[in-house]
Length: 239
Image 1 (cartoon, helix red, strand yellow):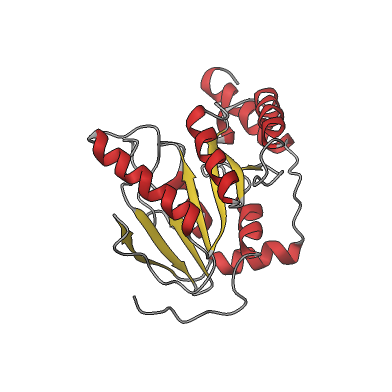
Image 2: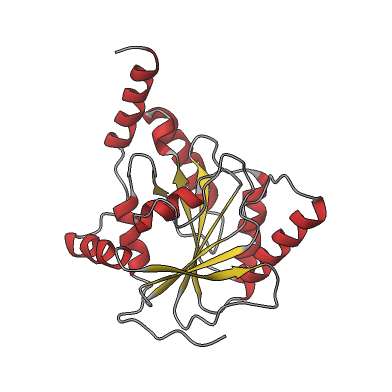
């Protein structure tokens, strides 16, 4: 094996060798599989503060730099290819998109930060809207802050983390695209990021490692999120 095939083999080996600090039980894995197999419907998109859904259930927000793989991760979790829009052009998500998962949990896909082919004023407006949502949504139970495993934390990520610390909003780092780097590089980035997380009061200490492409870490992340879901479906309030 040589060339790209050899590199891919090494990278897949990195994922096979990785041991997650969180090991869900078979029952938790099954509960996660069952929840994310339920109907996942688009509730709507918020472009400003004039409309936000009254969900009545816990919400999980997906945040991260543009092109970090947010939409791909949402699609992998729900087992759907087109639930969240994916694009080769970073910054295409320009609103807060809300998805109802079986009446038990709401997933919120936030606009990516750090890049967008749009007017600066528009980017500032999306960023401000996202920050207001993150800091002022009572039913928001956890923010998943997605980080490209190859690059680690950037200053724009640290800005979001600092704001969440001040607002006392629980967040967890999720490494994406973990199939794109070697075992040594993955271990090094995990160690570096973990040390930095220890200085953040609102950060969950465990880093979830995922690959939407390879399916790595998807079942474990489902299990983590299922712990926040309602036990039974809750009728959605009118808005």
